[in-house]
Image 1: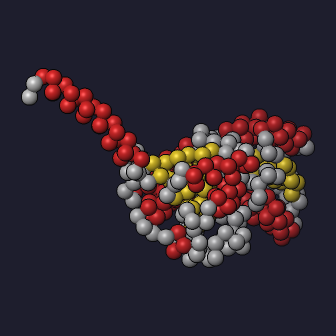
Image 2 (image 1 turned 90 degrees about the vertical axis):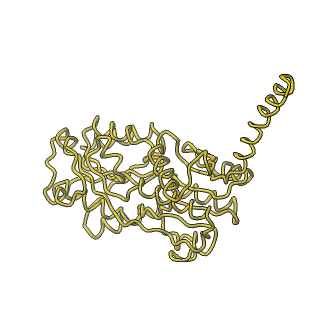
Image 3 (image 1 turned 45 degrees about the horizontal axis):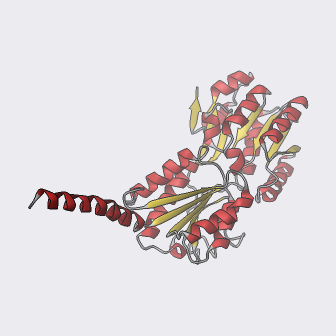
Length: 327
């Protein structure tokens, strides 16, 4: 072979190689990931999702591609973002970060499989036909956000003397807010406890809510399980420290960040399970036949350093029930 022919063949191979790589990449199944929060606040959960995918044999960039769409706490953007994922098109869509994202995904497609995190009762809300056999194109993991409100109220009662002040911070834009309040009202009535409701849907409103609470003497605050609140962990913990307010949070991440205590399901585990379900669907399972997964573990995390900073002695009953105590 002459040197000229060799150079021509080498040049042709150099051109063909990226074309082949591009064709292989475009042939990968695409997962659409729709979330109402921000990539920064949900980084640990995205990592857990990737771990779940890896458990069933899928690695991003090798045999699957992921397209992310973030609402950045502006839920009005979700329908448009869901529509973008449908147009790509994606093989499976993840809907997470609040029931608004799930609803947007549901309205965008009745054909594309959807794996969701669900904070409400999926049967009562009409999302699925039943827990064991969802029946449509939606399945996922229930995080039982609403049903744990009463439990957090009971724990808050253990932190205050009889007749002490308990408040509840809720996001008025959360679709589950009405249900949360109803659950709280019923539980408070049973316990004979008055609960003041504070509303906040932005950083400034959170600042104002904590300031108002401190001006009234503080007491114990329960934070609603809400995608926006879950995305501003450090801010809420800082506000509690600044105003010396004891807070019962909905997620472990708050206690790890320096909050007093938390009680709720594990979001990290929920996203790992979502990754597994997405992988199973890519392998041929139908969402209609994959049962809605219910949480099997509820985490009570207590931060003794935060308690010390508040001058609070944690009740022995709470410490004995704690799954994790941070010293």
